[in-house]
Amino acid sequence: MKKFRILIFAVFFTLFLGTFAVGADLQNGFMDYKWGEDISQYSALTMLHAKGDVTYYSHPGESYIIDDIQIDNIVFGFYKGVFFAVYVGIDSFETYDSVMMYMKSKYGLPSTKLSSKDHLTTNKWKYKDVVIKLKTDEIGGKMKLAIYYKPISRDLRKDQLEMVDETSFQFFPINKNEKPKMLPFLKF
Image (cartoon, one colour):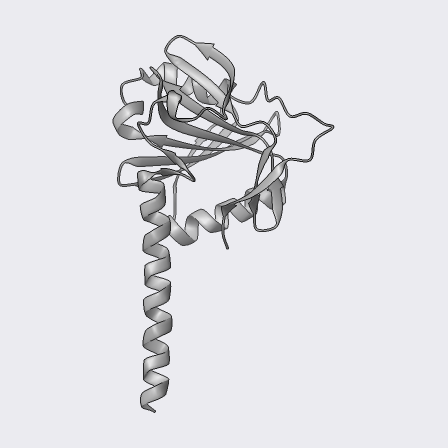
């Protein structure tokens, strides 16, 4: 009986530490990208587009895995040269559902905003200094996940931030002749 209690405690402790580590990772940055780091720290990134103080970058040839689903279009946002946002293009309903389930399991139920004018559904989570938005454009069929670091993104005017979010996936340079490098993005 004592061994059974120790086993239950060990499983609980491992799950608790794993949950804490995922949250701590997002609080500090995204994957190997640290919030507030200067673009000069990321020589592998390629600039996609710049508009005002916001510059978009990608890592060509790099993909991420969410629950065995490949995601290729990840865009990194830099404001005045420092990392503040990640935009993830979602190409299938299966991926969208996996991301939604993951976010709910880690951050609880989102606040949901429905815009009949724009036909957008926005699910939003807040975790310490990070805002996570999972958006669906019901007319265009586009879906995306956006993660913002509040201490930097709040310096952007609200309309500028929304403009950044809405236009971030109009470009993405993936060479069709190369197989992207696979990296785990969210682990289930």
